[in-house]
Length: 336
Image (cartoon, rainbow, N blue to C red; front, top):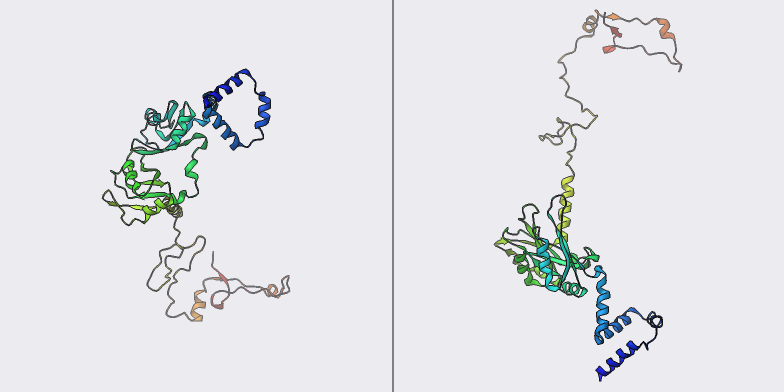
């Protein structure tokens, strides 16, 4: 019965008995998107020709077929990348991106499938182990977004420190997979030597799995005691350490002879532009008598001050002050 209806419908389409394209468009335009999608899906499931047309239109734009793949090992080649993703369908183009200056991999690449169905299949399992490291893929038009932009990422991503050099990314993921499904994770490797840097990261699909890994009292892995904590808290700690190291320590400037506490000399230096009083010589045991002092100045020339000068007044109406020498004696000038 159904076959008879389909045959009659196809004959009707072939005879052109349906309304014009303009008339059908005017009927479809007011419909909401979900209703249009349901209508096309229903027609495509009933009529293979319509299904093929839908696939052709959907795959025409490469934006819907291109994947961005990150988390690749530094030695992963374009051939290795394509081989890992070819299980989902025919690949139109695939390449690892290399640094132009150094010629080394930048740790990411792109895969473009020939059909959109293959792209959808790859996105259903976005995580893949490629050469011992877990790579993550998402639509290239989303860039670095996708699952990594979820609000709870800070509660799902863990920092794993103190790892043994023999621990690979695959071993790391197998060990921490006991707490829940892992979205992505890898050991951190040195770009030049490709050796482990002794730490890594694991991102779970749920917050609960991350909490289990943190709360587990057994922190022994590979014969070592490891550190398991939220990656965000570790990053903040590292940033604070970098800021602290960038600020030079500045000792309080104090004179070398100054003692802030009895018996504890201070090693600082005097502030710029200021000189602390220096130690003075001890006072003499006895002072010379005025007569002897006056006699010692006898060899010096006294400067007499005429009476008429003393009688004059300055602009303020005050008498000028006679210069005085040491000990109240007249000011004297040595002989030339």
